Length: 368
Image (cartoon, rainbow, N blue to C red):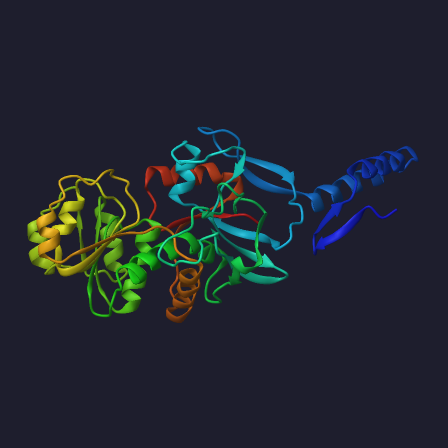
């Protein structure tokens, strides 16, 4: 009796689960008890996968065996080897993100295998035709569609790309979402040029570090801000010209020391945003991709129009920009900064570390 069809090298789909159950029961009652356990083992091997599931907002993720994905035209299954955390994942677990509908598998970043080839995953879905902005239907892996915190992830075939050969799986998994966000902010929005002076706020976070690495690779002079002196010192050891602790900052002295900035990349917003505006040279460009410190108050329009400043908002990136970012990383042999690697079994510890803000670089999960 044929009750399955081959789906890939290690996945099958039963036409009728009830028929399979009858087959196993009859086989067992015929005295083949030992074979029963073999069949159960093979069933789990082919039809189940491990995944970190958010069952309820406010609770830890649960590591579960879940049913494998059904075939869907135009989609493929990638065997995930490593996946990286983003602040978005933490906010979702706390209910601080729109459209949360548990149960869901989080994770937007991942790298693994497809048909034996090493690949990296573009997390985009339905950006649209206009590179200037995303479509109303746009979303990324990890909500509402299941993401990369699982042994397999289902994506469209055009969303996989060859893994940069100079990167490990853990390094490659750290790249997609933060890398493309930084690339769009720095190059598409701010049109960074070689030799310009750049300020990156909040160094240590994923996007900030990629913006930092991309700007240095472009030949810019890069400065950083942080609330931790050790993170500034770490950035200087990686090529930053210098930095300032925004908690104890003397902004006027810093402005004189640096000579002002052509490009500012920010993730915080809030009342401190005006300090960044004052640091800008005439004709400078500011791009912010986050708002962790809240609304921007006390913004002085006179400074903005007199200095001829351009202020941009940006989030994620188009498929075209993702492809350009991957090429840029390969051309310049950029290696993502990985703070730490956790087993999928210890994923909740990784989430706690990110929530505490103790990382410098990406936190990665080793899936398999």
